Image 1 (cartoon, one colour):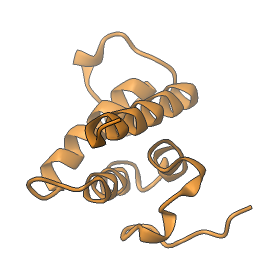
Image 2: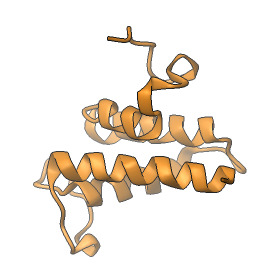
Image 3: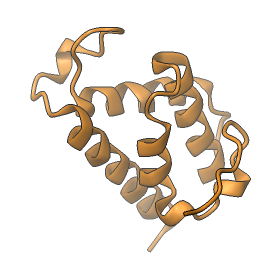
Length: 107
């Protein structure tokens, strides 16, 4: 498995966690409306697109992950940090490396 495949799988998992939380909207062209009734797939797309704007050129997986977490803080006040972390870092692997979220105790 390549690094790109691994990263794509993690972001796909995050997408489905957000869909499970907020539902699905086939009309992604409607976009994400702050404070509106939004679907998880639209939110996931917006988080990834916003993260692309703030991550460095040629980002590492950690850079991309941290940019998505930061985009969530800016867009939703961090309301989806659990879904983003669980999707991007299953089983909390690498949680201690996060630069935008302090480490949380494991259950």
